[in-house]
Length: 244
Image 1: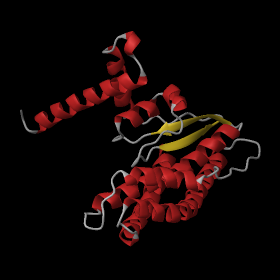
Image 2: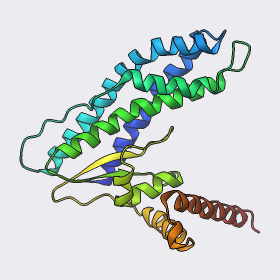
Image 3: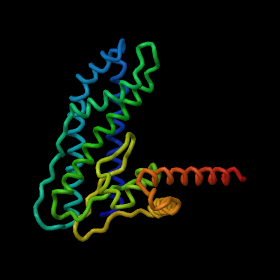
């Protein structure tokens, strides 16, 4: 598949996330904030319908994208992609639990609450699109592998999981809030996407591995070490920019 397909795919997820955040910004002022219980109850009543509606849009985006890529690949055989199953109530409960921790009553500033709701809804809705690509990739015999593709400015976790296929398989559905990594199917006869900036991801990863004792090379420890390396590189870049 082409890198340009990935870029357009990522843009569609960012655009969808923007719409979702706009809804969250408008929703919070309309919710009761006299107590956390009433606030949570109103969210539980409201969010399942929202997640179902926007999740259907997200799933349709995934189906259309998958169909387009499959057609471009030229693989033989008929396959009809479907939208991944959605449990809107479970997704809503996860969002409510997260938001209850940052609740402020009607006398408090709601900016953080709006941001947090937007973050959680973005993760839930965009996740349905990813699940759709992932599920169809698993079920379609014309797919040789699925990959997670991260952008150049991705966080340490995303960059590490994306560039290493084994880690992609280990964490196939783990995406954080504000994540715009995509899931991409690779069909027979195609090569996986490997942007030039993956060389930097790879270098940081193996540098981190090399600094750890073999018995301590868990994913969590490697991730922590990658964060240290990135921080030191950022500080060095800032000093160079300042002429020091």
